[in-house]
Image (cartoon, rainbow, N blue to C red; front, side, top):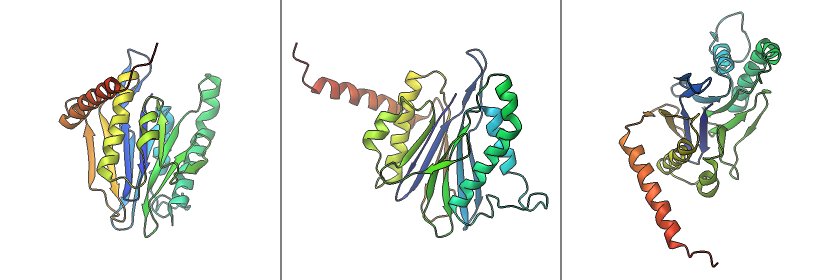
Length: 243
């Protein structure tokens, strides 16, 4: 399984995904689940994936087919006029992959469970963020709901619900996302380091801040330790239940 999350802010978008994939407790591997497409000065698109790895790779292959190929004359991620149209391209690729692999998965009693978080900016349009479902349809992040999660999201959701705001600075949102991962890593063995993180700043139309956070990353180790101490201190400072 996996855990991936993105938070849309006034200042930009923070994306992060773990790299663990497993087919049983003794068959664990690492795959990058964060993918970027960009034309500097024109567009930056980022996608996070969760679910069936073979399906997500099939979708990526469809999306990466040469946009100038005469065999594929339709809209691509490199030609979509806005983020909504780009999200439609991803949804259509997901539907195509489903039409190819879906029947075989059903015969094997496996679900078509792949989903994506897709966001970025095209031209002068403000950055946008979408959650694309296995059926290919999607919803968009709003001020009231500025973040999306896919995969093993339940352990990392409470802190996002309490803290995430669109007015946050990118650095604070990145810290929040890593705390969400810390909670998930502690409670779910199917999610594991390293974490791929990308922060996109509004209107830059380029990628400057990407990082892979591994087991020995000093900031993540410090953050995890300080958060544990802060939680214990907060617990001790709350009056005990009167029995």
